[in-house]
Length: 198
Image (cartoon, rainbow, N blue to C red; front, side, top):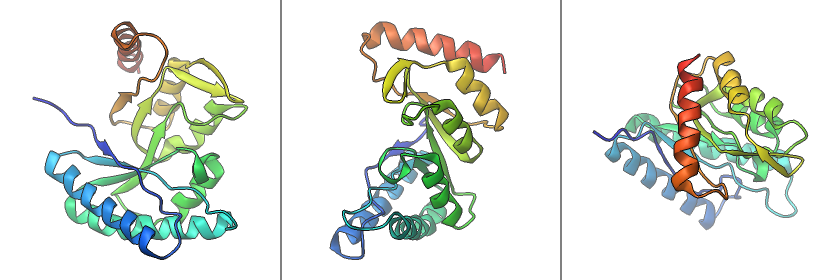
């Protein structure tokens, strides 16, 4: 049979109170229902972007409140919410971990560890900071150091995950220039060998 590792939505929990925020919360609940229907254990969520003229702290508070509200519905449906490091207010691991720290403790919440989204001087160090909270992993063949593309050191990333005790799905999210017909099988073979060796 087909094993579904999870699904994903686009949402913005940094939005202030109002119609747009209500819509994003309703959209999140709807997709939690869809995930449960598919048997997907995890739904990837975004934090969002700080509105112009707003403060990071206020947006972080609203983001955590939005996650907490959605989390009640997710727990009832048996679906985990996984917050991805995906730009916006989660561009830096420190900001992301502030959000994680304000979400109520729950077996139904954690981090969607995206191996290609931090673009700092040391993206591997940033990934190590969020790895202990990972409940889902998506890796890319490309990583960015100071916004300059380089090949992902999959061995280093798998070691980071192993050191954090991660035991869940590892998904290859392929966005590279190489033809996926050759790139995907090659990277999957590498990842399988690395995971089997842990």
